[in-house]
Amino acid sequence: FGSSLTSIGHQAFYGCSSLTEITLPDSLLILGNEVFVGTSIVNSPFTKNSQCQKIGNACFGSVKTLKNLIIPNGMTELDLVSIITFNENIEYVGFGNNPKLKVIKKNCFNGGSLNNGKPYSKLVVDTLPDCVETVEDFAFIQTAIVNSPFSPTSKCTFIGHQAFSTCTSLKNIIIPKD
Image (cartoon, rainbow, N blue to C red; front, side, top):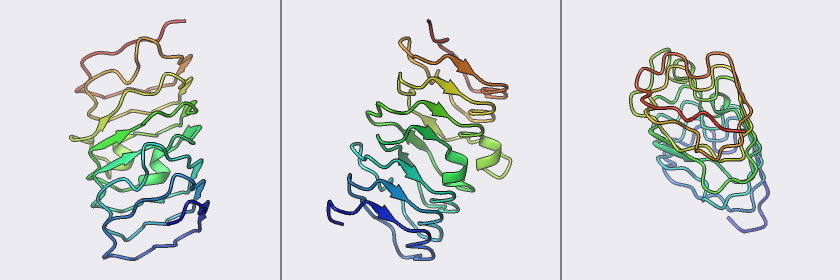
């Protein structure tokens, strides 16, 4: 794709079951709903310099082959449940150098919602960018995270109801200061 591509519409690659790899240009700003449903993508289509600002509902929904996802630098809010609904094989979610991410939405990494009611046993979530200010209700519930998603310099001011409930593998948590 050329560097002038800024948007990919709803269901653009829906049902392209042989599609296993795609690299989206850093210029992409909007990715529509259900764009990759029914594909066989294995790795994140975003580079760590991606400026994508909006990822549509169920964009990677039911892509059972997707193993990792890099969250674009342009994202200000993250609602992962609507992005990767029913993807039980995802192992890694990374944030690159995102300087804009402020909110981890309700149920974002909810292991029960993402994995048909079963907690993830393989999911690794990078440390959240320091600029994250809000972690909404149930954000990490039933995930298998082991280490704190916060760094000691985190700017987080709100951790919601049951945000880390039933994270039975969680060994340490850093509570953000000031």
